[in-house]
Image (cartoon, rainbow, N blue to C red; front, side):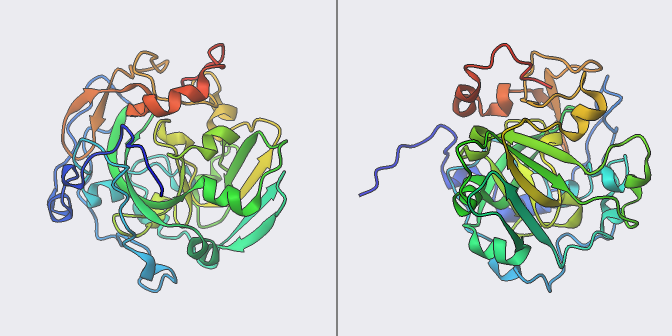
Length: 323
């Protein structure tokens, strides 16, 4: 018989905002005083597709079962707000990239899984999604720009993918990258960025229960602006770690140099763990703006997940663990 200890993030299902209520919310974000990096308002939602097309080959898998072990104490961000306030630098530097991102072709799509693994492979995204244990989890999402959302992601633990390819003992890091330069991605014409977008985790971070690869959101396949068809979510880290539209996952013995670290390592490091006490060089991280209404609230260490992830860093206190 399996005896499972209750974890601190577990709350009763009744603590999560009911779906009809969060789908009806239409609040707009208020000004983020003192933070020039944050827009004063969220634009009214344009007529955009809120999910991948109905012909998505995996659409029958949604909504996935919600795992009540992963929920939070604050209301979910309204779907239309989350769909229209996005960072996706391949399509532009503003938050209003949702329309441009519709040019992203998400089928056919394959993912290369290689490096220090026993079973390297290239797998079609639909085959991968159907092979993995999909479930919905409600997570906090915290951007380094000091805004935040609460989102119901659908995806699977990175650990499940690791079990599939069986990393070697010499694999210490997981490197993930998105697509290379494409004519339909106007942001990639910017000469000062080093494409493709690359991010990485330690093997222990990737294997943690909270680390997931996302394929859907709000009970549907993920819209393009959210990083379809496959993106990373590690909820205790700043959002720039959450690489979108992944095409390659490599297991390596060397620590990857991430996209923002390569561009401006003094502001955006490899670890990027959320810490209210460590300011960004250009703004405070002590509070965050809840997008879509809710005002400013205190930032939590490790974005509220410190009890579960702080042990990952007990021997790394001499490193710059915060962005």
